[in-house]
Length: 445
Image (tube, rainbow, N blue to C red; front, top):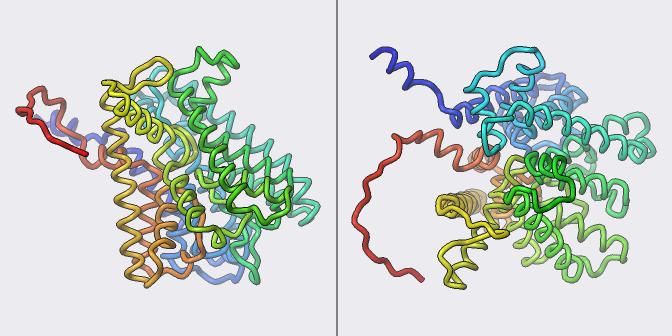
């Protein structure tokens, strides 16, 4: 009986994933409270450091203090470490330390790693973790090397640090930047609107980080032999291409038509990439039209792909919902991709995720709008940015009250760990129930 009781008290993989974020966030918040973490040499209030730590670990990018002008080199270093741990996944980082130290990774750890990076099976998880570490370090180093000449030209030797910081922030889809000043905070990358090196480097890092490590494992293993790819990789690549091209066309023709051709092209491309879910911007987002902001909100909610550094509902969720709708239109029983049908459980999960993201982002926006007396559209932009772990803002986050900031903190945490992970952690379930209730027809639509 005692043995059974202790076995029942064991944490599930989902609970371990949730709890692994908490000590890292608290440690980051406490370190950022130190006087040495701020340029002024004064301690930053806990609620502001907590917001910053959550935003960094959840790779969001929403801030209440400008990263460049408020935080010292030490503070920026703490933020960078939090971003790296959040981007790779706290569980993955912990497993990597265990692996490097030569200790044995237990079956429970392997199962937790599988859930953390959305791997299809436990087998080969240690090899995949090694691939994630090597890929992350290599790509972030390459990104820094590409951007360093530009930043060193503009900032001297400080440009090396800026190149490293922005490379990690871009690959981890975090959106933190070091471009602001005391006179002009929250500038992001607007000064590099038409710089091809910075634009290309940042966009490629965002896209690569947002595709997911499993997709890159597929690409590395099978090269251009697309037929050998997993169905998930094919769906991710197709959905990502569509979500990059179609919004870019819209932004080019309807939002940035007044810019010179070169700036117009770069701005349109960047604005289609960054909402999923990086948070950098090269254009004034407040100048976007209502439809432009609406499209940006949709892109932020969709986010990146499973097992990536990005947040959001995920490209596969949007693809499954679209495929299911097309199957209904064609009066087919099953939705399908590339000659393969999807499981009914996947469609139920996708529908649940959609309802959760919409209800939480809209509900939080309503509360913030009422509490702060702000337009609902602007509040929805911030809440979508938070739950999608994006970091784009219309400029209202730094001025929000405590309650509104707490709501954004909860949304960022929810968006990073995932809605289903939170539900499965809170409600582990009691096993499969084979009995079914009587069925009765219900008319919808």
